[in-house]
Length: 71
Image (tube, rainbow, N blue to C red; front, side, top):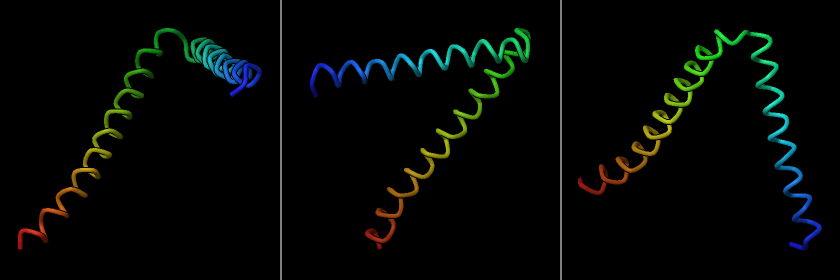
């Protein structure tokens, strides 16, 4: 990657950060600062459940290999 390409890559990362900050400010204005912890809790629970599902899917794949081989 040339120096010029690297600058464009970092500029893209900065653009994403700016967009996320603007989105956070808009959510605070729209929903109010008191409901922000509730939104964070709901988001955290969603991430936790998604991870649990992914771990369950990974676990199912390894159990299938052990089952037929043991027979």
